[in-house]
Length: 402
Image (cartoon, rainbow, N blue to C red; front, side):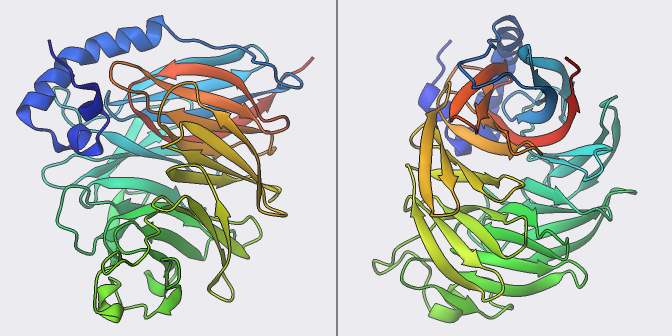
């Protein structure tokens, strides 16, 4: 059987769901499951000191309709269990984003494919039993949950027309979509300010940072991010063309192509991954302006910041590595090679010690979770999960007695 490795890692191939693609993926699914279970690798790789706690993360396997619960601790990394996350058992439904409730009671996964809309599924942590689901928009991607139980999921609309899309707001007790807030073309990234009052996302096609007032459930501010064109936009301007008269990227205009936003723990700043031009942009949230730009490796994609506010972790899809930045002076302390190609998501532990990175892999490879020791910039452990590992969310850490 012929299997095109390059096409398999093209998001368009992975998500369109054409019959031929689905036949190939259905035939390979059992093989990938067996490979991921039979060939996991884990171990310490020169960390300064072994971990003193067990850390748990959930990670979605987009091309295998699975979510894995992964544990990392003194004995290395391992899969605790895998959970099916799909709509139709004979198709690839594409679980993409993962979010864990602030109190750790539930986790949520976005299912990209639906008829025609996608879905968000709710599971109980610990038992990993499905508790409900909500239909949302086209190709739901990344998510975040407030302490009050509102889930915000960006509707990425990967294969639709390049028109303004939305952020769905879901009430998690009943799993009911209560609002779709129109933002702009291809929204991605979904994060809250530290006080939970503001939601941030970015728009890949429109080069925007968008702020939503969580209480009013409407866009409160927009910031245009293209280098040399940074400016405040009216809240009602859903696309940059509404203000500039032309789409971003035309007439030689530089592009940011933002793929992620991460607010700081103190709420003063946010960092945006500019995927198109190898930069991370720092935004002063009070002044609503760009203050710094950090040069990165190729294809910066996802970000997370340590709870102490000292370190920013950036996945480089193009360089197959992970950058670790000192936020004091904006310098890259180190770049850690990923165990396989195409690092995707990142989640930092509450003690600021480890970064957990999902790695998609290429072709027949399973996905991987790499654990990076942020103390010495080494890869502390790796473990195989399902194919095309993407969304990743931190659940909990438990101290281990000596």
